[in-house]
Image (cartoon, rainbow, N blue to C red; front, side, top):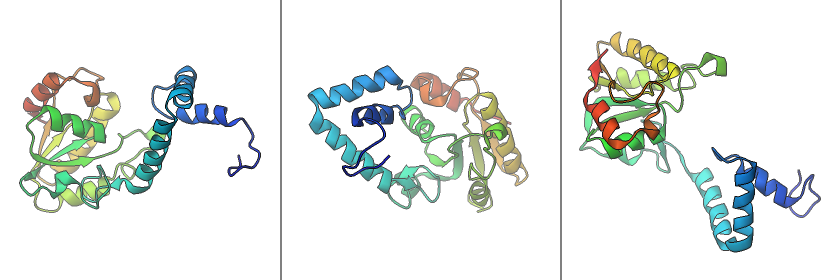
Length: 204
């Protein structure tokens, strides 16, 4: 594929439709509808979206402490000195962190794994940043670990692995339990259920 006015391997419209399919849940028909909508009725919005996508992809990185998405070196949560520095909640993804912030009164710190242990997919401790997590464990500041990974098989395995790392350092380890359905993902659990599950966390 060659840009800049040179011949391309396929029509530009088809490339636009194919590019939109990178979004989760967007199949061929949905991508086609999006492309036609932008071209027929909202070219200005499409240009604005294009500019913002490029700007965001270039500027948004990871917080140096919790690994959440941020355009600064340290995210707003980690920079907030009023939060409880001794508690560390471990989640799989930024949407999970956002869900907990919205649905609970938790005021501690976070660590975002950006995934879960899955050897078959080539995702091990290194890919989840567990070396950096252990540095947080060893800092002498953290006293309580809250495991808020999803209740899938991989999520439970990840929680168990991290729990063992924390226990070898004599840290208190809690796990969110009742209220979140087996196989459920925090991002999609309603706020009331999530708040109840978080408040009812139990030692593991």
